[in-house]
Image (cartoon, rainbow, N blue to C red; front, side, top):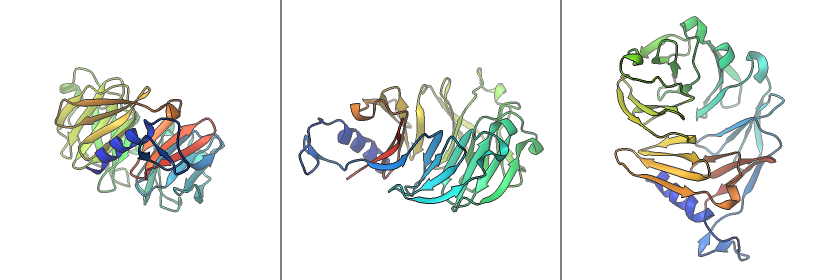
Length: 276
């Protein structure tokens, strides 16, 4: 699996001695030096599957950059609906900005032009921390007030929803992450674990994976960061692998694993460590 290879590669690339020769070799491993993507303070950032990076700055700009750090587009109307709570770049053609305080989702096209706005209050949804783009370009919402996972369209119309999850769960999650991947919807609460639903709204599994930041799901692999370790779990197994982060990125404020490389956020900006 490509993603499994990436995790193994990133561990082998970074878990090397600091001594390198002029060709960039260390302990038999060849790697590329980091690429500076963005210099400056960052409130949030995300990367899409094409290698583009979306940087939300403290002044309220959303900047789209390519994998070399070149600026492509800017959205300068970020603050109209308050503070951005979450950014979803699952589909580079439809970027989602979620404003939790105003229960509002703003949709942007690939040029960061606003194409739509959804007021969740008109759909009867007043309490939701997590949203996520669905495979069919609709939106998943976890409505904490009704204890249901819902799918809505671009007009805010509820297309489907689960039963009241208080009937099947002893403890209700309060998730911040929803990921639609390969026929399943992953709802993650970092204090309670991972809840896996099918597209019909049936709860298929619960996994006690807690304390993970930057959680990603690709194929059958769940990966992310837990303190100073990379964590990887393969669905359908009882195998949880933890790999200490290399010293070079242990102090990172955030890391983001992609097929192009690992993006690292620190106090001065964002760097990307590409795979050879």
